[in-house]
Image 1 (tube, protein in one colour):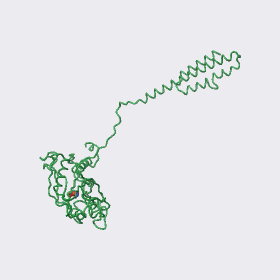
Image 2: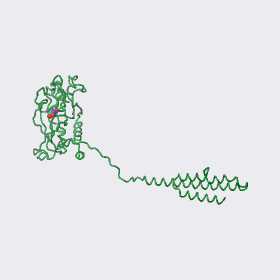
Image 3: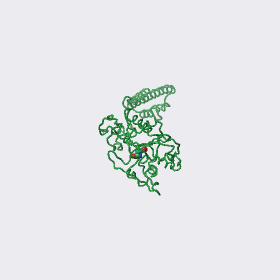
Image 4: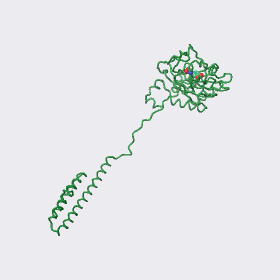
Length: 358
Ligand code: DAH
């Protein structure tokens, strides 16, 4: 009997040592200690033993059972630890490795220029407002002294969207942000109700309005059927051309650099009188003449003038009491100049290699 027990114990120990999964251990447990297991068979055979021997053999069987159980548990624990160690080795993270780089977007040069420009005008107390891109003929032309059949309509190669009952009700893609001037003046003057839902306001007015404009132009290095302008409008009492000049000087020195000078050249716009085009000294050569300014030392950047009394009147503002100035800046134009970009088409291609440079 002792020998049998010793053999069972020895064989079990060998199998336990050899097993490498917990399932194998479970099997050993069943085959040795289970209901039909080897040890259980011995317990069952005890009825054939003499009453003196029974307790001794019983005790012996229990001891062997406890020893085998302990071995199984020990092995189970070892296996668990081995598995864990292997898993940890597999899942090692090297925290010193560089991470995956996020690709960062870039501001478009037009947007950078616009934010710069807005910063300058906000600093001078201007408000920034938005106007509609789809506009009535009345706002885009009529109220700006460009009546039916005026040649300026042809010059601006207008996109017509819909015919109205009258010409001034025709709907166009705005050809200039100057349309916002008409809306704002209507909304502030005596003709508020005709401002077509534009938010009512009071005089004086001091604002810029950046936005997209549209002209039926062929695409080339300096033209695009859609580009951006920034309109400026100031209406108040005793606003003079000197205020306009001072404002533009401030803008030019802040935007292009402290040594920049401005020059007003007489010009004609239907909605301003007098009107001027404004040149700034070339920020590259300082006025000596170079490639950027095509040798002249000056660069044209905007149109401006004193708001025409007839325009004020048409918008319900008394020209005897109020005066004002307006200006219109081509955003692409100043951005191309400032960042020395030679071809406007680059602005619209959204090539990341181009955009990354700003
Ligand atoms: N709207 C004009 C254009 O598109 C630019 C302009 C000129 C705007 C003079 C103005 C201005 O406000 O006073 O060519």
